[in-house]
Amino acid sequence: MPLARLTALTPSTLAPRRWLCGARAALATLIIAAATLLATSHTAYADAAAVAPAAATSTTTDATPTPIATAANSAAATAAAAPTPNKGDTAWMLMCTALVLLMSVPALALFYGGLVRQKNMLSVLIQVFVVFSLITVLWCVYGYSLAFTEGNAFIGGFDRLFLNGTFDPVTGAFSLAATFSKNTPLYELVFVAFQATFAAITVCLVLGSIVERIKFPAVLIFAVIWFTISYLPIAHMVWFWAGPDAFTDPSVVAAQTAKGGLLWQWGALDFAGGTVVHINAGFAGLVGAAMLGRRVGFGREAMAPHSLTMTMIGASLLWFGWFGFNAGSAYEANGSAALAFMNTYLATACAVLSWLFGEWLHKGKPSLLGAASGAVAGLVAITPAAGNVGIPGAFVIGTLAGLVCLWGVTGLKRLIKVDDSLDVFGVHALGGVTGALLTGIFNSPKLGGPGFVTDWVTGKTGYADSILAQVIVQAKAVGVTIVWTVIAAYIAFKIADLLVGLRVPEDEEREGLDTTSHGERAYS
Amino acid sequence: MQWITAIIKTFKADAVREAIAQLGVQGITVTEVQGFGRQRGHTENYRGAEYRVDLIPKTKIEIAVDDAICEQVVEAIANIARTGKPGDGKIFVSRLHQAVRIRTGEMGADAI
Image 1 (spheres, helix red, strand yellow):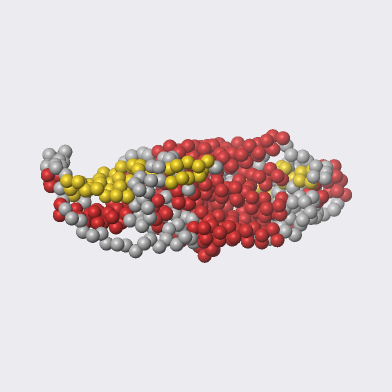
Image 2 (tube, rainbow over the protein chains, first blue to last red):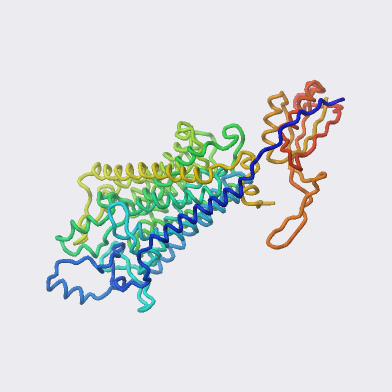
């Protein structure tokens, strides 16, 4: 049977842009790095002033904030000498740092990787692995300094550029950072390392929204910019303060309080990063997914996870590592850490059950993906609450988080109509907001919570004027975070788009990023 | 009835499926295969060692169609699957003697 002559197509005109994208991205990264290096004002590595015990983040050249010089004060100051870090605290915090590293690599990498199609597995793994490394380096260059040194209410300064001053090779002395207890310092390097893992995982979280279609150079450019203009200011606003040792006397309270970050001054409670990490990343992911557009074939073709086994391994390792994330945010091996640990453990288990039963009722079958997602939702929601609520709070927060986030990835997702590929918004943003608001409620001693320190001179704990008052503070902090990160994410993605373009070409997306972007196969 | 076997590049599989569905083809069998034609494969370099890649992963699509639409389907597959570069694949058409729908026992054209 004769076949009709096949119509000739014009040859494929795929321009050879791949090398051009890589070159432009490399150039962009070099320019940003060079600009950063040029901003160095302190070239001397050893800073003698750093030897004196300094508050968590006050690393200015005038050693410690000067209290009113009375005879008693100066005598006490010399008599107290320099308190040294507790070995238990040091060991604990170093271990926690390693646990949070584990949360990124491999936990998050596997959790996300298992959820994508086989052809994109390696692209997810490499994005997480490399972004983690990139942010770590930037943290040690300028990130730590901008987040955790004294500056203004929004951002710090450059006193700790390249971690200048954390170690003096001449004297062999290590600088100190504050915890939440007076005269209980940490080695500042421990604090630097611990916080580095937080910064890195936050940026890695955003990747979940943009997988399977984002260009690798665009990932790197976005990471550098968004880390700088979103993570650093928000971390500074929520977590930077002068430290308990600065509050020596009622007369200095106002001045010392004013040194803290904006949201810290407002009294927002965020134990381990509900706003700084999860709301921040969740909303940024949504912006990215919206700007990127849907994956080719979204809504028509099956995009089922290729390995829920890997996802479960990832979720389990996330649970394990999260103990470092939450309990480590107590900065001491003490009761607060124990409370944070137990809350993290319990809330997560509650969320697994509530998500699972919610799904069972709603869709008919309980799924492993639901259980794993429930665990992550619980972990996210308990993050701002971990050391700030009591056991009753953990029960409620975990259970509610499972249900709220279940809605977030089903009903809400359908309403928003954005292809947030791995539900970063539904879990991290919604879970973070839920946890942040409930923290305000369950921090109250009337609901079993520990309250918070109302007077850093005496260490007296109390609570806000009312539960509503504290919830309003929480809501304001959440609001600021959302607005800030949405704008920052838009700027970061836009710059990446202008420099190298955001999406890979359609046929590369169809073939899979592993082979086309990275020249590798996950499971040949 | 005709039996069409199309061996195409893997990333074209989704597009081809959509195209033939629009032509009224209701059933399909998809297999992941390896092979080569005149493309034969090439030499690759991995961490310093060279090796030959002969068998290239492809996707095989098999469908049973009515004589009436056979030409259209073949043309559609070829157009969608073509990239213009070596390794686009091949389409084979053979006569189908009999077809049976197992569930109902229908035979012949009713079974396609």
